[in-house]
Image (cartoon, rainbow, N blue to C red; front, side):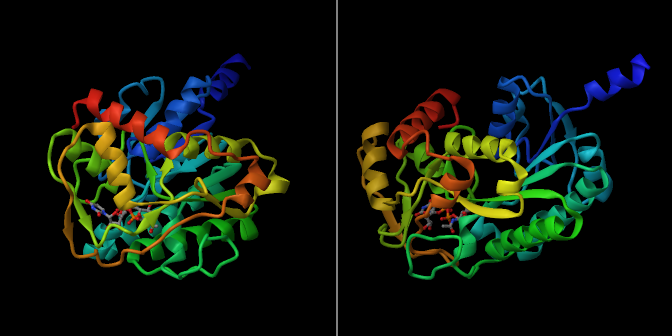
Amino acid sequence: MAAPCAVEQALPQFLVTGAAGFIGRSIAAALLKRGHSVRGIDNFIAGKPANLTGLEEMEFLEGDLRIPEDCARACSGVEIVFHEAALASVPRSVAAPAETNENCVNATLNLLVAARDAQVRRVIYAGSSSVYGDAPALPKHEEMLPNPISPYAVAKLAGEHYVRAFTRVYGLETVVLRYFNVFGPYQDPTSQYSGVLAIFCRRMLAGQQPTIYGDGEQSRDFTFIENVVHGNLLAAAAPAEKVSGQMMNLATGKSISLNETFAILRELTGYKGEPQYAPARAGDIRDSLADIRRAEALLGYRPQVDFREGLRRTVEWYRMSGLA
Ligand code: UD1
């Protein structure tokens, strides 16, 4: 009986989808650091092979969640799934809505079916603040009716509903974490669809002028990656009675305008110029700020790193990584 037992022990406890992406690789790294066994899957549409550096202990599958068989391979033997894979961009979804739907909605449904069939215990889903849309009421709290205004937001919301339906219908434990503008080391700064802070860090470190779309008074609850990783680890460990089937914001509960952010980045990077202003982007929302009391109550979550310190570490990382 020794052999089957050895095989069981070899199976990873955790699956991270989108493991070669910014958030996925950060969660995988934290799990490995804590001595857990981890499998990762990525199709390299948005993820980068270079992001797997440092994750050599992870079992990695190059695979695509749009393919049910790949989902089955990924879920086999796993206890908990962190579902981070997505095409995480509002403008990309405006340019190619069907592509976003396939990689966010179809992929999530395939993954859930595979998780159910493999008797995965819990799926933690990367939700998005974009589902709140541009209703003026702030802060955004979970009781508000979603009002998605971009194809990306629709896709992330559809994924949420599938996730919660799988709890109701099949008893799969699930937790939805709605991320607010995550930033930090490993976020890709090179794509036109990159998050604003990654783009600004790269350009300003290289002495290049950044572009602010709109008047720069739009504000965001920018959340440093370590806070998001922390929230995910809490969501994995929390008792099912408390969190399963629940949806909650994961953010800092503070917001800052793009103009103010630019001023801080000027200090941190040494950039001397002014930003260029251009027309506001289609599908953009004006202000975003999270009420984080639900995550505090259900997970015991508190932000670990504040915005300025997160930005300082991020700038240092881009400086050292050679990406700037
Ligand atoms: C949105 C979602 C977020 C999601 C993310 C994926 C909201 C509040 N948030 O972020 O949940 O995960 O998409 O991409 O809806 N900008 C510039 N110059 C640039 C780039 C961007 O001024 O070079 C501006 C944008 O026009 C926007 C702001 O910066 O007003 C933030 O943009 P971005 O980083 O792309 O994120 P959101 O669209 O807010």
